[in-house]
Amino acid sequence: SWVIIDPTQVNSSQLEQIKAVKIAYIDLGELANMSLGNVPPPMNVTIGYDQQWSQYIVNVSSPAWEKYVESQVAAVMNMGFQGVMFDDVDVVEQYPFTANGVISIINWTRGHYPHAIIGINRGFAIIGNVSEMINFVLFEDYGTQVISPGQISPSNLTYIKEMTHILKGYNLTVLALGYAYHPGDTYWNTVKSLAASEGLPSFVTNWNLSVIWLQNTTG
Image (cartoon, rainbow, N blue to C red; front, side, top):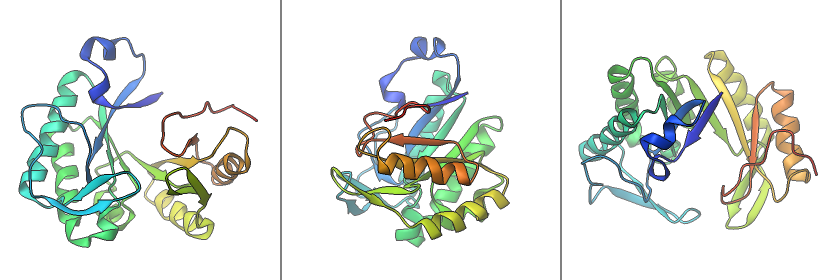
């Protein structure tokens, strides 16, 4: 089994006690409040602001940002993680000029850690460029989405089904992630039923991802 962990919340000794394949969460597209290794977050690389999560969006193609993220990857791999999951890769849809930077970082990671498990959260615009370098895709907003703090709504089911079909064509593992207010509510059931109909493992969380409910939880 795999477990995705915020690497700033654990140390190497704690990692050793986790009997699973440990994958480090690294924010690729936004300036999250996390920093590891000896390269500080670069300044003057922001290109926008994500109001929903209160984080700055970064120019991933900036050489300084690429160096920073690569230092984060090296740090977590040295800690004992077996892989990384890059978040906010959908920056390439909103800012297409960042695509080369995203591809470059993923290519660097695969080149330096050929046996690592590498995943991305969305980033569908570049899936054809990186499919042979990654192992899995986290498909966030699978059936439901957060539209503002504390507010959840259904997402575009037609788009989700079409994109799922495309991702399966690349023989990638796809993990579905959706949102609900409570286990077993309408939103929870929407995510679970949609993912099951597509043959995908699914995970449901509350609006701010402070809890992910167990797979077999029911209302």
